[in-house]
Length: 127
Image 1 (cartoon, rainbow, N blue to C red):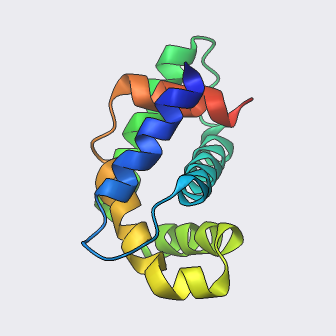
Image 2 (image 1 turned 90 degrees about the vertical axis):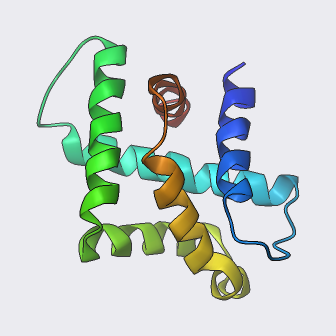
């Protein structure tokens, strides 16, 4: 169930990309999912000391709020972190071909994630 929900989020990001031939196949979806889970881990690590909530749904709510703040703030540091994570998961050719579009799509989809989607990503990142 969790794997299907994470795949759905990955496809949501890929479907948000501008019309180009990105070769959307299972490998691309896996790469996007890897990027997303890395982002969730980074957010969790950065926010770990801020609050220690026992309820995972409350944690997911805070992470959702953090994601929305990150997207709305659109700072240089946040963009650099995202670029670094993308470069870790993509080859140089892949990054040059569609890294910027993928970054933009991740940011656009990130602001509209539901509580359940954030909870699913958080659980998958912690597995």
